[in-house]
Length: 63
Image (cartoon, rainbow, N blue to C red; front, side):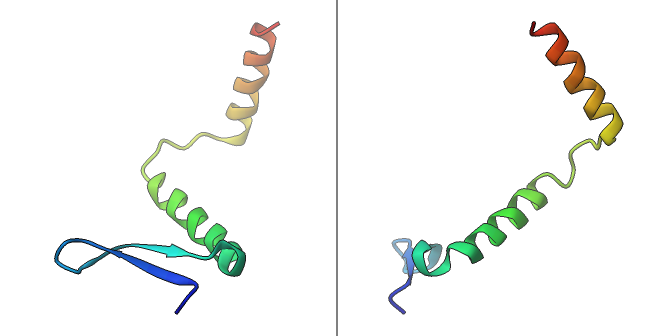
């Protein structure tokens, strides 16, 4: 398939993939969003109200 290429190691095992972003760009965005979400699954959660208050406090101290 011309729009997808595999990167292989010295043993010929697939290690990565290259995709044509003109063809698959929207799918890549979805894949990336899922990867970021999984990478952050163990991060501490913060409520919207706490985050908003933190942002407001930071904007006051930046002035």
